Each structure stands twice: as structure tokens, then as C-alpha cells.
Length: 249
Image 1 (cartoon, rainbow, N blue to C red):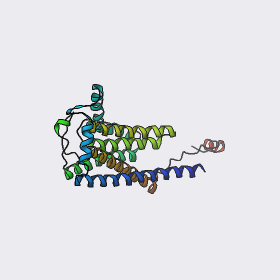
Image 2 (cartoon, one colour):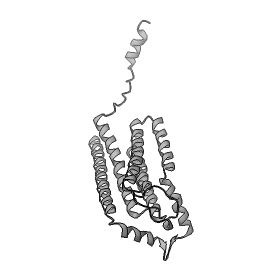
Image 3 (cartoon, rainbow, N blue to C red):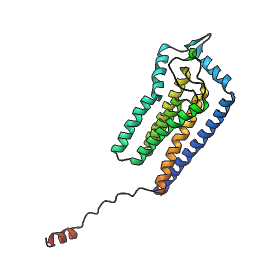
Image 4 (cartoon, rainbow, N blue to C red):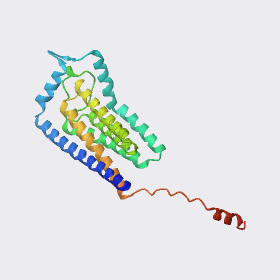
């Protein structure tokens, strides 16, 4: 019975990952189509203006500490910070000889960067006007690289941590923290005026889909090629030990 329950939980996790993958991919395709046709322009601009003082697009709403906090949070989705997180995670996994998990993190992060940059060049969408931007930003706007890559890295690490956590509350904490960090990074990009809302929604959707795609691929690989468990040598009986002692040297 315990084995059946464990198998059911594993299958449930795979189904949930597939649903996130499919939902994220469909959401991104819908958003990309709307952005290409200009259907999100009015909504994106309305959100941006709502986050500025009336009649002053250069001034953010909210207290000064919120502006500073948003700039700090948005750095969590930068290539530099995420690169350091990935390197440290890889070092930990390699030291533990978790080769497949290290490969998932490496492929997920590297593939996420390639996909994000490729799509940015493909769509070539302009960022909000300079008057709205509270921080510097370069390259095209769609999809948000910060939102996508933070979703990829944090969700991948959160899913791996939840996989090996023995308690449900720890699993929930790992996944919840990953989702929260991704949401905060994306929201900060909208608040600071360097991305349209549709950019961030697309980044979240595609990042979650890619992270789950890597997780499902690793899960399927392990199902197809399961690791051979280490079988400890059985301790010899007293008779065996006596025979060994009596045997000629």
C-alpha cells in the first residue's frame, strides 16, 4: 500500500506539471497573438498610468521606501543574480552527486535565456516611454526576461526542493516561495515602468511552461531509466565468520 500511495503521488505531480506546461504555453500563445495585433495596448497603458501620480508620468505612486524595495526586488530577476543562484545550486548538486538534477537546472536556465532572447528579437516590441521608466533597461520588451527567467530558475529549484523534502509543509513552502519570488520580480518590472503588463504575463506563462517541461523531461527519463539502488552487503553469520577464520591462509 505505501508503494501504491507513493506512485500515485508521483503520477499526480507529473499530471500537475503537464497542466501547468499546457496552460502556460496556451497563455503565452494567446498573449503573443494579442500583442502582435495591438489588442493589449490600451490595457497596458492604463496599468502604467495607474501606477503614476495623476498628470506626472515620471513620479511613481507610493512611499519612497516602496520605490527602493521595488528596485531591490527587480534585481533578483537579473542575469547576474540568477546566474549566481544557478552556479551555487549546481555546485551543491554536483557535490551531492545529483547529476540529473544539476542537468535539469543547467538546461532550464540556459534554455530559458536562449528562448527569452530569441523571442525578444522576434517580436521587437518597444518598451514603455522613457518618462515612465524608473530604472534603466535595454533590449526589446516582449516577453519580460526578468519575469520569465525568475520563473524558470525559482520554480525549477522549488520543484526540486519539494521533490526531496520529506514533509508536505516543506514542499508547500518551497513551491510557495518560488512562486512568490517570481510574482514579485514580475510585478516590480511593471511598477518600475520598464515593461508592459502583457510582457510580464507572457514571461510568467512561458517561464512556468519551460520550467515544467524540464521537470517532466527529467521525470520521464528517470521512469524510463531508473537508477539502480545500492544494495548493502549482508553481514556474515557467525558460522561464516568462523569458517573464514578456520580456512587456511
